[in-house]
Amino acid sequence: MEAIILPKDQYDELLVRMDEIKISLAKAQSEPEDIFVDNPEFLELMNVSKRTAQTWRDEGVISFSQIGSKIYYRMSDIQKLLDSSRRKAFNCNYK
Image (cartoon, rainbow, N blue to C red):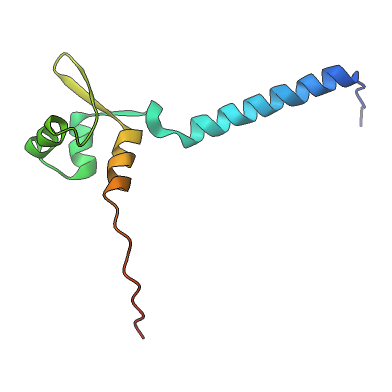
């Protein structure tokens, strides 16, 4: 095995860069907000009608972007909608 010798400042800089890359990769993998779905995908994903999606947009239930006649939703906004509507399961002890 070949050994490489670095001065301490270069070694420290290398560690800092590796940490930055690690954080960047973790952030990219954990944040779905960079993923957008269009309206047909949203309708299928949520199993709702066009009218329901329109009502949710009108009432501010879900955030969206519109470019011309195309509508897009961020996956993070869909996740927030589902999380805000989540109800905890009852604690049932079936035997």
